[in-house]
Amino acid sequence: DAGVIQSPRHEVTEMGQEVTLRCKPISGHDYLFWYRQTMMRGLELLIYFNNNVPIDDSGMPEDRFSAKMPNASFSTLKIQPSEPRDSAVYFCASSKTGASSYGYTFGSGTRLTVV
Amino acid sequence: GESVGLHLPTLSVQEGDNSIINCAYSNSASDYFIWYKQESGKGPQFIIDIRSNMDKRQGQRVTVLLNKTVKHLSLQIAATQPGDSAVYFCAVRPSGYSTLTFGKGTMLLVSP
Image 1 (cartoon, each protein chain N blue to C red):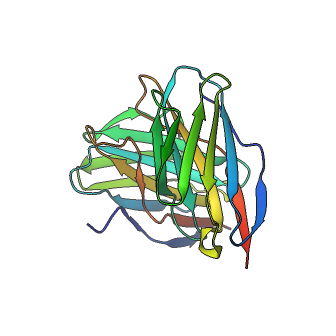
Image 2 (cartoon, each protein chain N blue to C red):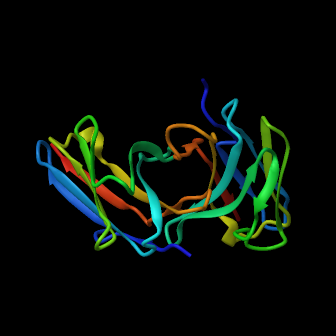
Image 3 (tube, rainbow over the protein chains, first blue to last red):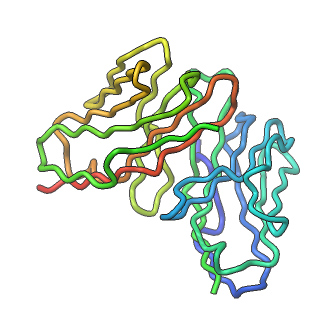
């Protein structure tokens, strides 16, 4: 298995621009999580899906952030408009109900820099 | 909500030493605990987990200890190697929840 695949690996954009981050979870996994990582706040859960349905988006910082999961193999996290304080590493992770472990498998992350 | 804390932000050891990384959690109803390792430029990687009905679990060179009385979790790495240098996170799942709450991380630096 290729694991959780995120794209792009790095994104540099100007303030005010729209940014779209992409994630392909592991096939067969029914949970998908979006996390943001910064030095100050560590790993923060933004939103998670179960069977493509958003379950909890209370971690999404503002209305500028939105996430979708149109099918079991793809999810996007969009920021519009982007701001410098959105600069962080964004991770996607997936997991499977009934697996021996409740642990998540993380992607390699997207490093976002908003200038 | 769950809050997870770490006692030491950075731990420096010599190659061959045993390392101990600690983690405190607040919710006594938490039922599942994981340690992750994150190397520079990569996502967190699962190391070992333990359920609340256990107090010790061993893997390859790693041992996780759980003390539910004081809500404390530790990761022991035997014969630490330079390749063990990374940030280590504990993560906790409150009972009945689907999500994990992560600690802020401890950086382990291993000198040859």
